[in-house]
Image (cartoon, rainbow, N blue to C red):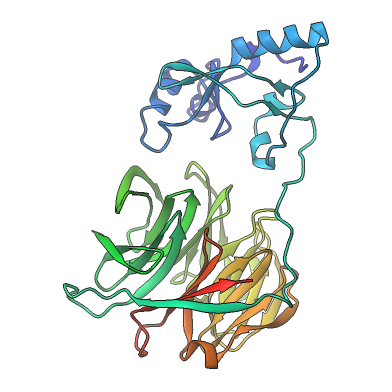
Length: 394
């Protein structure tokens, strides 16, 4: 049992404002300590209204009682490293208890938290030399009512839906997994990047210096009442479960935000790596190491760097634009080479997953979806600019 008392736990949002107010709850999803007013506010936000707030006093009393009686502990499940962010959780054991959930009392699933972070449990990685992509469908994202030529700037599969960013028509277009058009959502600004946040929630970024959160509900896309500011227009974004990694092509920089949208750091490439890189159209951040992978089309290669901006390796490629991860291996869309490359996270080139014979024209965007399928979008100007190709990966 931790020696810290409840009185030593301070509300984190208040602490950032220079106030020292005792925390009453801990958000199970955000891993954040909250006082009573902040707890109420937290459950009013659309993005966090379904979160679970653990009552600290009740939790401490129950945990102490169980430890004193030396009763057998219930079967526990491991947690991710990002669930260990708050110091007060170290050495404590979360057992069946109650939480605040829209003011009602409900049970918490039994969970154990150890003093040392446990390694993330990830599915067994596939041998990249054996990966095979088989085309299963192709569909157009063009609508009759589109006022301009379709210009795909991102494709994403969340839940049972496919979301496509149509930049020139200022639309988020929603399709089912068969490619049937469902609905569109108008955008106020040019949007260039899209990333999955969790389940049916995703984020976009663009020229308005803002990251927006969205949710797919039924057959529509609903805007969340949450947005995060960045200080320059963005061209790509990726969320790895802990950080939002935002790419800025115009000023050759990368912004890192935490899951609450607060800026952690900004990487100026000239300062960090000693040179300017002409970024491609996408970015990827590893969920375990937080290493950043950036296609650099003008330098003809894929750059890997740490979250602090230190360059680790550079793998030459003809003209890379897009990037995703397939079962532990990086998949890079090479517009100039008209292919998809497979590269390990250590920078070792494996082979081509798809080539010109499979794709026809140069790929620009690529996404390995929650459904285990690979989605490929193409650059504006070629004869497949309005098409999305779908592949099963085995």
